[in-house]
Image: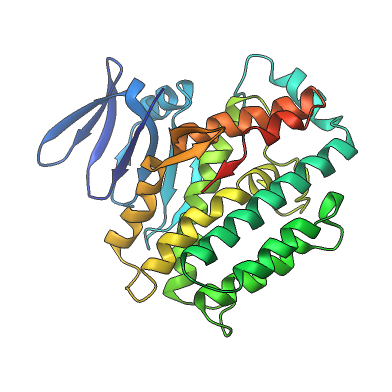
Length: 290
């Protein structure tokens, strides 16, 4: 499995030669493409060859481009992530609506449960209310326990005046971390031959990543914890690198420890198998747990 996250944050030229990524600035560095999971282009002063981009996409390496403020702006996604993408997409369109509701219910439970654990870890008494929300969630979350839990959760972490609409270093950190997490899920969805646009719960016509937005929900707490622990710090380069480094964090999924980038791969495959085989129990075995 690929494991390296390569962050390019300076003026340099990226090219390809003999299965290697070549990084040229005041010196020359080489990284074998088989080792690379993600390349983040963090500087608009970087130049990159079309040949290299083509080779990266062939190997399903995720490439993230940042804007002039060094915030994630776009990513490179292949048109065809699997040899039988057409078949996968036909199945995706026909996924059973009840199965999708059941899977979303389990995703929401998993997310709220992890939020409760974060609050308990931070000695916030609101974790008890979130545990109640988790226990009382209905199929399809028709009473929006997930939404109510989010409000309680963020207010407990960052104060009652906090909202996700505020312009602040806290929200900048959350947005940056979530963008990296979303991109990781986009890669796995495309690699498995499915469309990120067709979600099981998120259905916005303006969101090209509805399915990724669904599947990433239980993992958001990883970003939240980093931001909580650094909420008094300026959102600078070092702060961003802590969020990027989450991809190298070891997490527990299915009772086993994995690096996050590999845990997302395992988790995503099990979610697809649950929908394809109409056996939601498959997904339950691979809940992400703190």
